[in-house]
Every structure is written in structure tokens, then in C-alpha cells.
Length: 308
View: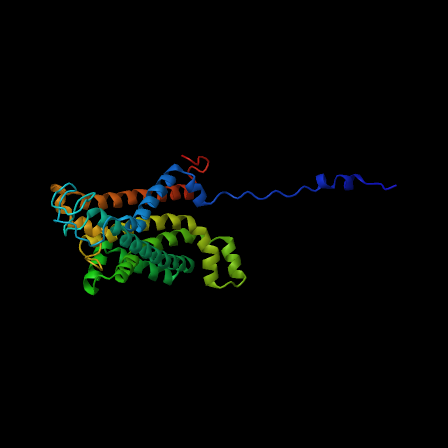
């Protein structure tokens, strides 16, 4: 007869599986749970879709002439039906609006990404060294910050010409100091942590410490700042276009549309200015709501009230 001990009989109960450690939800997951972030995402997604895909639903070509300039939609002087009438050059306003958002959004996105990369690298290096290099880098950023962003962009563009590459570089360089200061301020506290000292003791290369130890611990404030910088970049690039500095003065552009049709605000044709102004305003509101949700999630606000 086989005798089974109590320990063997209750093996499953005596050795329970260890519970998985609790991991708080990430910043993005918490932010998406908030109503403000959802609304911001819906507004932004709708406008991005309109800017990138609207041209495929445009009733006319980007530079197609439809009749006498600056005429309302019901004017008999228009040769074709038009939803919002004709613009300054006799083009369809609705068509130009559908075409005009893409160049601004692409330029702003590229400028923000480049500024994010440069600002993150500079901020991490400054925070990690905390010596003469820190002072040199931060004082250089302060010099750039001393110039108004749009003024610096206009000076450079006026000197070298308005090309898409130059606009991206100029806006990125003028945006970099703001990101670098945020990154440095967030990383300074992380540099003093024990796991950074342990990595140094193990002989890890500096670039790997910056990438693997510092960068993951400043992701939350970096996401918030990236969202804010994108919003400001859209406004700056639209302002540059409003002042007439565009790579192609004939191509549709929301900023250029505001300048070209501002005289119609006091006449019978306000849509050439109103449509891009409304779009830029809504885009700013949408990205602002997303940034607000990210900042609340990063600060731990409303973590227990996902829809607050």
C-alpha cells in the first residue's frame, strides 16, 4: 500500500503561484481614459484626415479657375457651382481649403520631430554632465530663446529664401531650446538615482546610460512638451505663410489663404479667411486637450477617475 504524505497530498495548496507585481497603467493609457483626451483626439483626427485626404474629395483642381474672383457661392458670375464661392484669384475656396492643410501639418510635424530629437539629446547630455558642458549648452539655448521664434524664422528665411527644408530647420532650431530645458529639468533628478550609479559602476557607456536609464524616465513630460511644441509649430508656420513666406506662392496653404482673403471679411466673401482660421483654431484646441490629458496623467491627476 502506498502512503501519501500530507505535504504531497496538498502540494498545490502549499506552493501557491506568486502573484504578478502590480504595474500602474502607462501615461498614454491613463490619458486616453479621460474625456478631454478623447475629444481632443477626435477633433485632431478629423482635421488631419481633412488635411491629408480632403484633396481626393475636392470638387475642382487646386488651381482650377471657376469664375470672377471674390464672389459668393450664389453669384451668377461663377461658371460652376461652388460651396463657398471663389477666392482672390478665381479659384474655388472649398477646394483650396481642402488642399491647404497638408503642407502646414507636414512641415510642423517634421519640425517638431527634429526639435524633439535635438532638444532631447542636448537636454540629456547637459543633465548628465552637470559641469562646464552643461553651462555651455544651456547658455547656447538661452541665446536662441532670446529671439522671438517667428522673428528668428523670418530673418533666416528672408536671408536664404523660403524653401520647405529651410522652414523646417528654422522652426526646429527655434523650438529646440524649449524642449532641451524641459528634458534637462526632468533628467537632473534621475541622474542622482541609484540605478544610474550602478550602471556607471558596471562600466556602461554614457550613451547607453542616457538611452536606457535616463530617457525612459522622462517620457511623460517629454510627451506633453512634444504635443505643445507641435501646436506652437503649426501656429508659427501658418504665421510665416500668412506673411507671404512659402515655398510655392501658388499652392494652397491655410496661412496664405488667410492673407489672401482677409479683405473679404468686411465684404460678401469671408469664407476664404474664416475656413482656415476655424481649422487652425480647432486643431489648436484638439492638440491642447490631448496635451492637457497627458499632463494630468503624467502628474497623477485623475488616475482614479479615468473620465474626469
